[in-house]
Image (cartoon, rainbow, N blue to C red; front, side, top):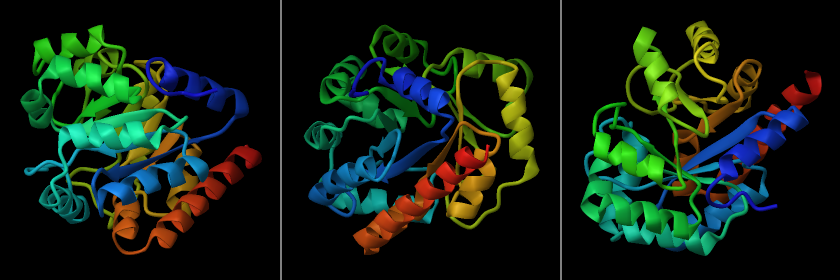
Length: 267
């Protein structure tokens, strides 16, 4: 059964819970290294065991991103990638797994919020994640998302605390994305014990699944995080491989999938 569109994220997590599996959630920057390569990569990710896929809209001022994704965004923009073009890539890929559109707020506002939500749903997206829109930051946009068929994925940092944590996860749906470190995205980091403690705190505030991202580069980290989180997100490590070697990108995804499945079997 396809998990495209509204409700797809919840159906996906329900199956994962039943099967005792950890979600593999890869991130790609749309338009990098090219339009056609993006569509091919999205299809490859689904075929190699991705459970959900985050598709990033390139932006000229990606403050939360490290050098790898910044480079990918700038190159995609240089080649003429637009918001409409990103949605067309999602439509063309025609994936059975849920797609989460990952974006900064400005491109959405420039496109038109209501128009974007309708077009994203029509293209097959199931959810969206806005990196720079905290809860209460723009009530009009937040209300528009709630009226749409898309899940709004809440983004939580290790420093999110108290009432702010409760309001952040309470205003979201689909799953919680936990940033595993302070600073920008990148591949040179470790996953500390504070991440596991934060997952435990999030679970006291919501029943939504928790996925951990920022800094997961390979099988060892993925397996370690899978022992306490519901999913892992891999971005920079995959984007870097996509830029130089499609075969290396495929091998990374296979390795991560095997590592996650091994944890499930052991558990």
